[in-house]
Length: 107
Image (cartoon, rainbow, N blue to C red; front, top):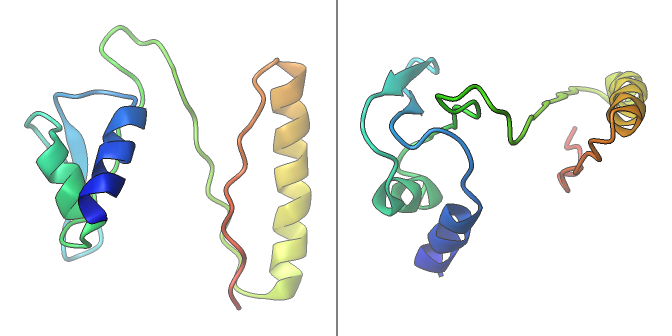
């Protein structure tokens, strides 16, 4: 099952393939200057490492963007929700339909 998830993640992978951000025990991310391979994504899916993506390739094109709105209370979530709606309207104006995550807030 985990290998299947890694394969799905690999099929959707966008960004630089020669480097990826690797989270260190301090919580900081640092560039890992090696090719992104399926084994790295498999370790990520198993919870052994936390990796990210550098979404802008060497040719400076952009294929994706991501925003993370964290909220610690229901009140803060309502404020963030308004900001998310503003971002959605902005993206629609520029004909870049956003894809919203499916995470539910946990308080």
